[in-house]
Length: 178
Image (tube, rainbow, N blue to C red; front, side, top):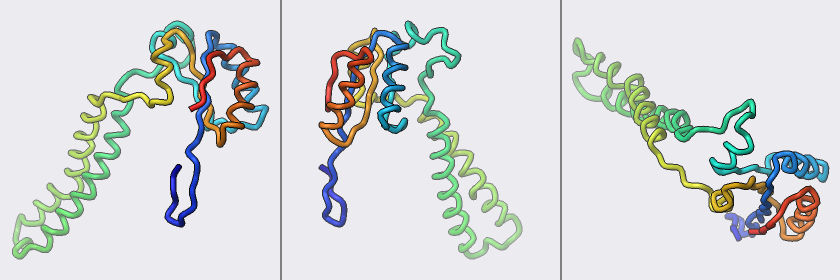
């Protein structure tokens, strides 16, 4: 359980996972879940590389390649670099003698501009070479490499049981509630 600062306790979400052997069955299960009132952002479909190549090789959108974190980390690095550059620029401007000829050029070169570019480059490198760790809730997708994993976040085990009946009716198997 998670506890808020107010002292109120909140339960951790319960995740229902089911395995499928047919993309059409996954689509019908998702439609049934939506019809039952489950929001789209609580339903996820996870496949291993083998299953993606097997089931979705001809899909209009190809499976994502490794290294997709590059741009996210470049943005984070750019933001951090910008903030560091602003701080460096402000400290440099406060130094005595900076108003002499050529002094402000240092602030412009090493200030926010270069720091932003440098931070973005470092962030992109980190993102490109970062090894992704799969979410433990979806580890079954790697274990069952030939199957498609459907995961649904629920508020309670009772809700997971009810949604599990819907998923099973659409062809889901090996239901787990975590």
